[in-house]
Amino acid sequence: MSSEENKNNKIVAGKIGIWAKYKEKHPNIAQFIVFFMLSNGITILQMVLMPMIKVGFGHTSLVGTNFQIGQIGHNLNGSAYYVFNYAAGSISSGGGGGIAYFLAVQISMAIAQIINFFVQRNITFKSNSNILKSAFGYVIAYIIISIGAAALQGLYKAPIYHLFMNTLGMGSAGETISDAITMIINAAISFWVFFPIFKIIFKNEPEKQDNI
Image (cartoon, rainbow, N blue to C red; front, top):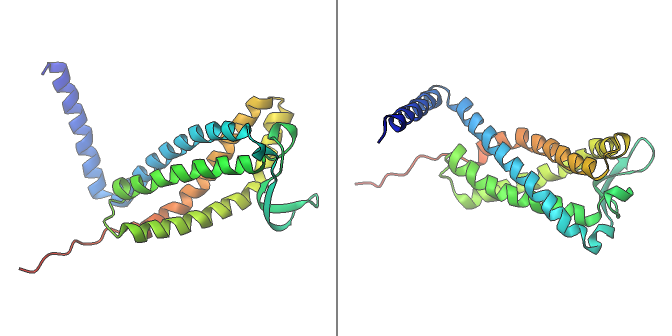
């Protein structure tokens, strides 16, 4: 081993030692930091997957299939306010992407959250609780959070797309930027809600010792 490699190994070992001491002294903060870093990685994965899936569905008739369900009142202009608001037609033509956009969002989220379940359970929380019970709690939380986040999209989604596509005249590039921004906002909402839920469902139970 060269002196340079030896020096690098010592630096890495030193950093690992510092992190280990910090985790021991501030376990909850360290856990949150790991959760934060992994969540950002999952968000980036979702931002890569969603446009790819959207393009795939964009060549199907699903774009023209309306998907507006869960009316919970009206907007200020009198139009219906839906929890899931994906009007028929492409976004570039003034529509909401139809069920094609809905599926692109939900499939990319599902893939990301499945990965998120395992990495957060095994790395962040190092949980040894029953995986089926944890998965059940995770799915319930995911459904509730997804519905809540979808309902909130009605407040910011349309203005963001209008700003970048029309006001700034960015067209398809503006649509891509708007996709990314809405995903980031949605991920941020999930991030702050999921952490306390994970603390509950990802428990670290004491191991049972066999009686001698």
